[in-house]
Length: 110
Image 1 (cartoon, rainbow, N blue to C red):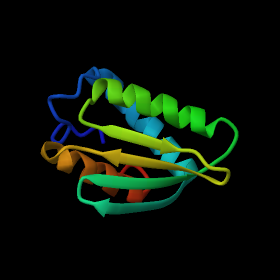
Image 2: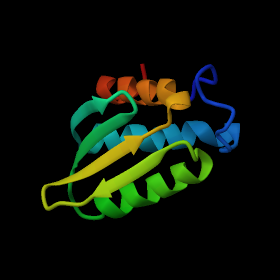
Image 3: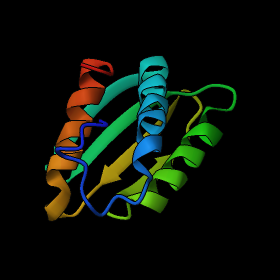
Image 4: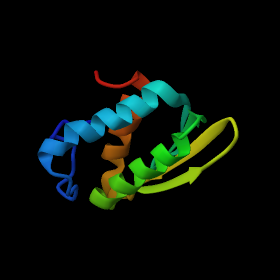
C-alpha cells in the first residue's frame, strides 16, 4: 500500500512514515483476519479474530489512519470472538479502498 501511484495527495502522513503504517496494517491482517467482504463498492468489511488487546490496537490504528487520511470512515464493532471493522470511502477514493482490499485479500505485500 505504500505505492505512491495510488496514494492520494490528500494523505497527510509523511512519505517516510507510510511504510511503517502499511506494515502495521499488514501485521494486523496477517495475524487476525478471519474474513473479508465488499458489501458495496465504497465499503470494505473485515472480521478480525478477537484477543487480548486487539480491539485497542484496532481502535488506535484506525484513529491514526483517519487522522492522516480523512477520506476514510471507520467503524469498529467489538465482539467476544471477532472484531468487525467497516471501512468506507467517498467515490473519489474508491481506488484506494480497492487497493486495500486487494492487499488484504492477498495477505500483505505482493
